[in-house]
Structure formats: structure tokens, C-alpha cells
Length: 353
Image 1 (cartoon, rainbow, N blue to C red):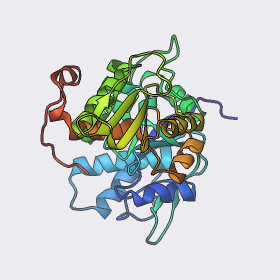
Image 2: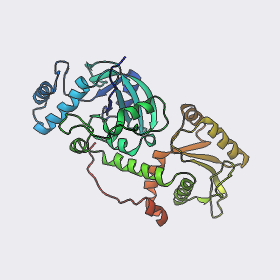
Image 3: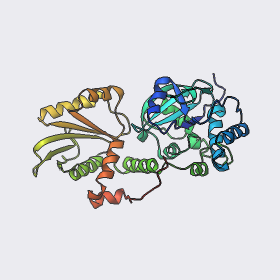
Image 4: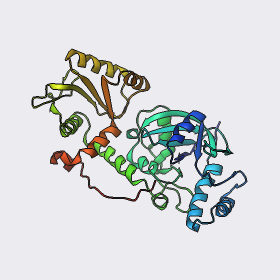
């Protein structure tokens, strides 16, 4: 039994997405400082700084201090029972686990050398399940960050335990940030000093706007406009009893040429079950359409995803991340009414990755 509430940590792992699956399969969280040897003897921040300065003589004092703070947090400050969040780069999901082991050094290639044992509880959490304030913290470029703002550990624990959506902070819990002079903290200053993943932060802001401005039936209007920008002719039935049809899309001027698509749109942040897929498949067959498209902002349950994988040519799924991809791809062709709600501006940024 723990005599304290667990802390929550973002551990980004490696820039190489291959190691994301390796960590999940191996039961580890890890960091990719392969230049460094075993850090077991570096039991505090000063000794960690000395170790890194010797191993990386070409790095500035600021860089050495930054690396030392993150590695000291990983090796010494994270405790057994704490929560760790891993952003999965290739699928844009979040994995949640509980730390089960002390710092361990794994020698050799083909693995992350610096690891902690983790019992991974969930590996399929959509970013839309997390409220914007914590998504900001989860977008930090720092390899290790303690997520502590706004009752974060409680909220992330609830998601890890199976909650479909971030419950928000508990009443009466002070919404304060830790002191900025801590070594690895969840603060605007610390995140800024470690750099922010601007691309992911921008996508998360767009996801938040979609959740706030396109709830309920209004999301089907956005999806219809994106399909029109992709060259489809769309008919949006009247709101209400739609018989499982939110949009009918097809090719040609009349929208009845192949391929014809029956679209169902689910704007809620909770995951969609396989029963919804079965319903959509039935409607596609009933109307002799070529394909079905399910737009599910909260993603799919594991059984539903398995069903899609088994018959992916019949029913396609857009989750929130896919919707953002297509929104960005066709933004210039969308009507002004959409651009007023989602005002975007193109900008070039340094690729921090």
C-alpha cells in the first residue's frame, strides 16, 4: 500500500517510434541516452550532472543541466506506483502504465539502455480524452516531465483505470503549479525552456476546437464539407431520426455514381463499440452502397478496432486525428463559415525532433 498519492510523469522514450512498441511489449518505460553508461551510481542531481558533463564534454552547461534534471527524475525521483504516460508517435495515442521497478541499465544495442519496469494498463487512449490543460503538458519536448498541474495525477489515474474522458480536477483541489526552481516540473517556464512540440500542440488545440465547436450534429456538417473538398457530392439528411445515416456521399454531379458511401458521425469523446459498426454495415448493405465511413472522435473499442481490421475494405474509420489530417489537407478549399470557426494560419517552424 502506498502512503501517498502517486505522481504522474510524461516519459517520451525515444525519437525512434520503433521503441514505443518495444517498451509496450517488454514492460518498460525508457529513455534514449545511449551515449551514457550505467547511471546507478548517480543518486542525486549534482552527481548526475557530473556524470553527464564527463560523457558529453561538447554540450553547453545549460544542456548538461537540462539532461541531468530529466535523467535524475527518471532514475531517482520517479517512484514505484507512479503513473507514466507514453505518447505513441506512430498511432497518435497515449499509453498509460504504473511503474513497477527501479532504474535498470540494459547494455547492448536494439533496446533502450535506461529503463524502469512498467505495468502498461491502457495503450489506446485517444488524445481527445484528455482536456486541453493537460494536453499542453503532454506536448512538452522534454524527455521526462512531471505532470502536476490542475490535479493531474488524479485525472490521469482515472483515465488509466478506464474512464473514457478526463474527469477534470476534484472540487477543492488547489490548481497550483510547483515551484519553477524544481528540476523537472510541469510549469509554463519549464516546458518553454525544454521546448514545446509545436506541431502536436497545434493539433491538440485544433482537436479542442473541434470538441467545443462541433459537438453533436454540427460535426456532420464539417465532415460533409471535407468530403466535398475531396471531390464527393454529399447529401446531409435532416437532423434527427436519420436511420443510421448522417451523410450520403457519392461521385458525379448527382452523387450517385460509384463509389457511394454511407457516413455515420459520432462526436462524443467516448469510444465507439462494435455494435455501432454492425449497425453501419447493415445500413450500407440495405442501401447497396459501396462503403461505409464511421467518423468517431473518441476512437474505437478494442473489439471494434479488430472488426474494422478484419473487413477494412467495407467500412473505414476516421478518428479525431484522421479528421485533423484531412482538415489540414483541404483547409484552403473549405467554406469561409468553417474557417471562421477554425481560424488557421500557415507558418514554418523549426523541426525540434
